[in-house]
Length: 387
Image (tube, rainbow, N blue to C red):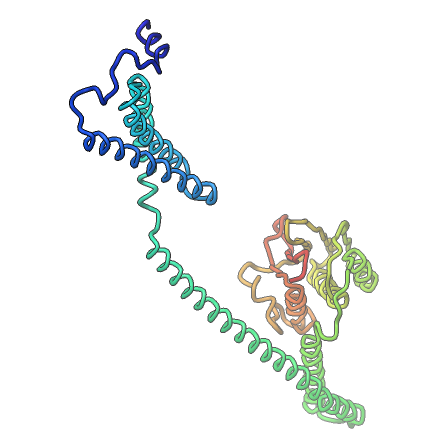
């Protein structure tokens, strides 16, 4: 410890050594070549860190900035040793030189260890050529994406146009078919009313069959016409589904009373949508629940809503005869019937209406497994905000 104390106490004391000019035989050329070279090296070692410092300050987001600071310190220490080496020619501060050499050694090894840590990441850094290639690749991909997007948008516009044409055709066709069918029905009625009482049974049955068929055809065309009109000339409003269900129950009160049905709903959401279509949606689902109940058993309908992050889930469940799993997707098809007309009247279009109405609201409807194992259950998902 005494040597260390003595070293730092006499750090700048030159009295124990002669100046380097006095050590050996230096010619003027040799001496000034040595001194000039050391000073030139020191000046360069001072300027280089200045540029590195400015670079690090101006580019604070460069990867692994610590290695740059280590290099700045390493270069400054190296330059300082050369400066002191030149000063020693006149001022023999060998203790200061030794201390600077020790500092240079420490910083040098810190830089080495920093490079060990930095090197695996450094080899992963991309060169200018690699960056340019990546930019060209991205430009190419962006061009392909723009082309694909334009193509999809054009295809979407084309499909939208065709859908409008199909809806217009369905509307016109179903509307224009109503009149000849009405004529057939009227004349069939006239023939039935004016028929001879002694008319053969076969002819009476043929007239009755013709009348029933024409009426069913009118029902089918009316259903198709209504299906094509869904969403037409409708404005989006804020719709309280509780109020919709109250109106539906009021309009179906006779059927509810005949089926001794109980309908439970509360805390249904208020959504942005088409009021008439939403009324039709819940009316169709309620009508199905009342129609397909068990004979002699009171019908129970339960409607509840659950709020998710981006959508409302509305579950409608009853205790009726239910829907077999293999038909849970097919029931949403137009004019799809699972039962004969003799057992359950209708034309099989109510759930097709329901599907189209939900899709008009950017949602989806599914027939799901009922919680109690019996009956039918429908799950409707409708986004909170319209796209």
